[in-house]
Image (tube, rainbow, N blue to C red):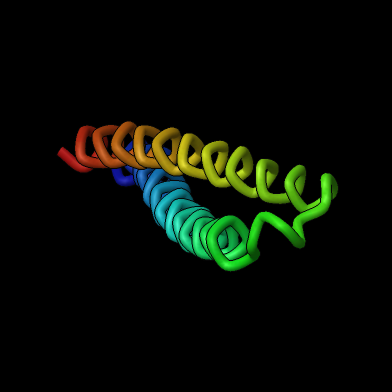
Length: 93
């Protein structure tokens, strides 16, 4: 009888491991988004308009776009973690 439970247990552990990894990835992406937001603000507000070049303006815009993409990725990772947690709880029951 324990042989029948083993595959489910292994799957549960795999889901739990994926959940942990998803949460860690979410945290890393959140940190990167926060750091990039700071860089964006410093570039945007800390450099006066009269010394900016077109390349710098493009770089400022790119930091904003990348920060937005990272924020969307955080939202997606949060949804993945929620789904994995639901699956893990379901398998544990």
